[in-house]
Length: 90
Image (cartoon, rainbow, N blue to C red; front, side, top):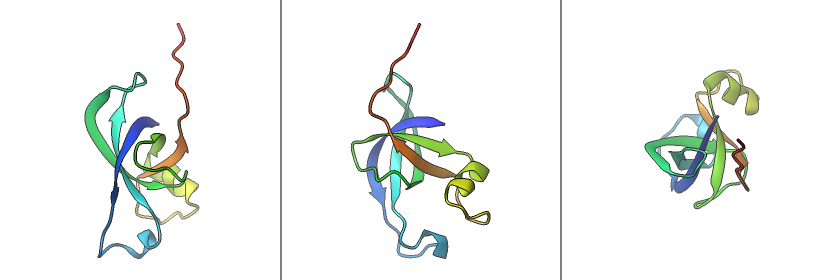
């Protein structure tokens, strides 16, 4: 699982039919503290997230295909939740 901040939407004119009607978001990955780590992920949105939201991403192909209930889906990353608060315990 990855935590990150949604920084934009991704649009395509030509894509695999699986992506028709699905929202793709660009997410800048962060640590638990919220500091960007210099990487990004493009993920399908299954949590109704938007630009500026902090999100939880499942970044593993087989698990992502289970979320979308399609064993042949050509994807790796899916947004599974919007993060309200992160509390780091000692």
